[in-house]
Length: 164
Image (tube, rainbow, N blue to C red; front, side):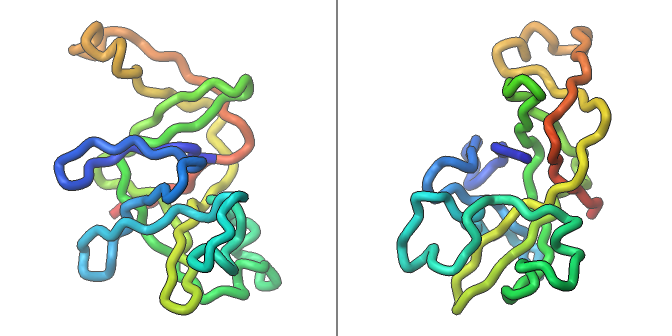
């Protein structure tokens, strides 16, 4: 379900996980600039800022397409989330990091309630096999891409992507 992301913000490498309070994702605005937007809502968020937003960080695309979906009760807009890497868990709960191509983005749904915004990652069925990139600790051992990584089977949801 895309439990974490990596991106650059103000020349700083960011690694963000959904459970982290105030986790934010970089969303591409209509003028092409990036805006950090709070990623969904956590169970323990009971502030006026969070009021009214669904408690989770993801939207099943199939659910969103349904005209009777509760997502349709919100003012909403599909958006592009600009991250080069995301984290998924396999069937055993182990984390794996995956890379997007430079012209790809994660599809998101921006919900708007009275000038407050939250972004939710759109998900669909995962590929049968997905190949993670090597973690940082082994990066220096593989400067030339000589160490193969094995495809892994991911649990039931996968972030939807698009091309710029």
